[in-house]
View (spheres, helix red, strand yellow):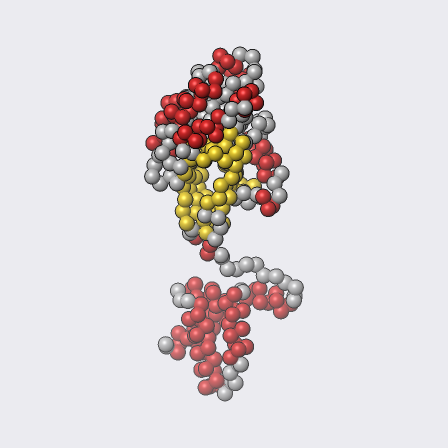
Length: 321
């Protein structure tokens, strides 16, 4: 340890702070503090200066390493001054990875359902690095009492639509979790038939509930929300209102939304929110209402540490007509 270097670094740290000295000289903060202690020893030898109390010196070293010189000056002038958080929490750097797919509004049994899109998505949904698949409702088209709707159905009735959904959704090999949407629930209203529960049983999927369901993975909560309210002019408005209606205690970490056939990603109140698109072309009803459809699905990669999302990377996979 050369005396000249000790004096140089110690003097620099006195002017600019330990952290800045460590960064500029390419050494650790603890090394800077060691140099400063050594420098004091040199001063004692020359001037007979009494060394400070070791405990007090430790406190001083901690202060100079934690706060900048400007912050220390503000401390001395104002006892109520609160410094910025100068330390970056390393939590964001990495975490336990998971990868999942989000699909919704397949509307199997509709003439507007695109089976070719489904088969394009299937190889991606079945990749081994996909931990699970989440379906956010309207697995089938259902049978409403709307005039002319029967002519928009490629399969009529509970049995035919259920069998077609089992045939197709049964091709998904990854674990799958599903909720019922408003089209699925038309069979419940008309005949008490819970078609999504029955489909889930036959293909080995997990049924989470009607319209809303939640799973917890690695300590984070993922909420699936279908609903039956209408679209809004601003695509994000509906998602924001869903989140706004939640108490802090019930907020999920991730919100996945179906029903409106819109695709986008946003963050609101700390909730990672995805509106998940559809597997259906724009229907005649949507055209009459001047509503757009965003066909596609999502692959999400997330990293979790200590029950918090430290990275969230959603990837939209669009379909084109």
